Image 1 (spheres, one colour):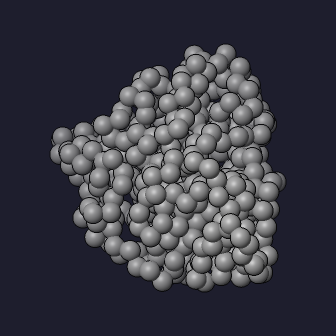
Image 2 (image 1 turned 180 degrees about the horizontal axis):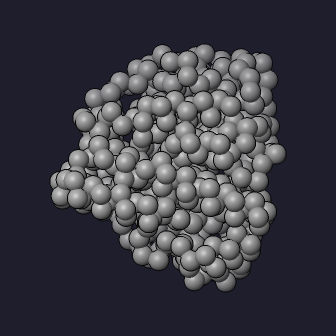
Image 3 (image 1 turned 90 degrees about the horizontal axis):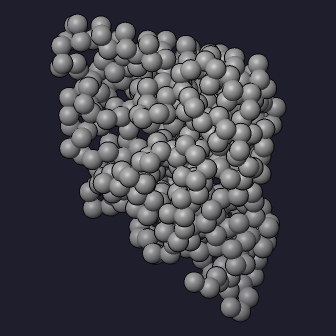
Length: 448
């Protein structure tokens, strides 16, 4: 599709720590001009934001879109469309698919699968194993979003638990290392305790005790210590506990070698919701106590936590209804992530400027995403118009993820995604996809 010129006027621009009235002119796929007032010119389409918020599209650094090999749950086309409806304009997908993305050939194959099929922009991780250090060493800057290491229970070969393999990874990784931190021996001990007490009918409320705060702290302490020792770039994913916050420093990410992430469901839910949602909110690491949730929000506001993401991980509805040890972990979240955060803004728990910083600016900085994550002249036009005054009720009639369920069904959010623009093209507007497959491969320029 040929790119058009687009003028967005009457917007409340939220960008780089301030909110101001502005017009934005998009020429082709880039932002050409930002000014208090821009007059429309012949041949330029005008989109009246009507005083709504204009923000840089969310860059989600942690999703599981299930392709290749697990496409009964989701695929790059369906989940990227759901992401667009949620105001996410770029995603970084995890390597625990089938075949697993643990070598550079599989990484190239995955990029080939995405070409021409994604509504939003995409990047992929190389997965670490106990035996693929040469593949890790061979990675070139820009070839992957980073290196993902599961330091807790995972599938196939993607549990990195060999001490020598871990040392080699942190010593030689040419890119940022991302870790899932849970201590498997602690989890196994907790599972044995739960089975002794409940047999096979372990209640879902035991999940935060099985995937305990201590299991998280033991693993994240090891990862942060090892990264410091090797001066590696480390990003610790989906933190869930108050006790782990002491591992991370306050302040701007530009002054850190180790950064931290929290996911939207850990900012929203606490363990009281196992009673009504059960397996639907089972995820790893587990949703924990109300006190932990409060501590995570505090850490976002003090800049101990640098990024907010989703960990979108769809499973079929029938799978999520199974008993504790059989129900898989993960939630579909990309379509409602910004609405969750706007509700937290409305409740006075996080500022809107900080939401934009944690979902866009910080991700671009930490991963070296080229020319995205900010509303700046010359940057790609990845933009979202959010309507804070248009309530949105989640129901089966408006779900776009392939699994077609959500833990938010029946919930009414206070805001709506009005328009999503990717590379200058409108991909979602007024509750509907435009069928434009505007997504491109992300460029990365940050090395170790």
